[in-house]
Amino acid sequence: MTGCTTLSGSADQGNAWPMAKILSFKKPSPKEKNQGKTLCLHDFHKWAVVSERKFDVRQGKLVTCYRCQRCGKEKTELT
Image 1 (cartoon, rainbow, N blue to C red):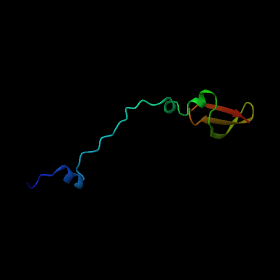
Image 2: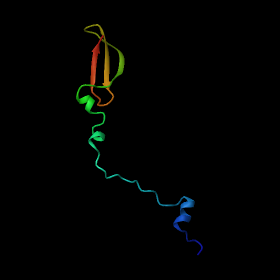
Image 3: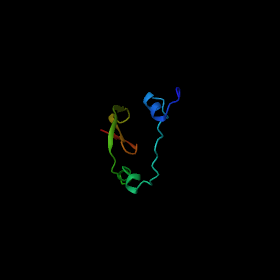
Image 4: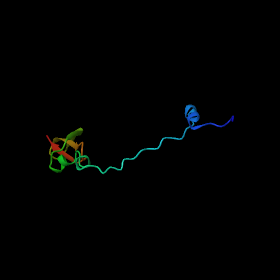
């Protein structure tokens, strides 16, 4: 039987079928579902500076923009 390859023989050559992506059908627990969101819902954001050195012409102050790393909410602060 020349020319016939078995599954194990074709796997050695790299011509095997691609592996299927295994999906998990487990329902996520409330802890996994709301991870990182509950703090922002209660105004405990994780603020990070987005851009510096913006200057407000009307008030003559430096404007600093902040964005929450978890939810994406933005706020500005005049200094």
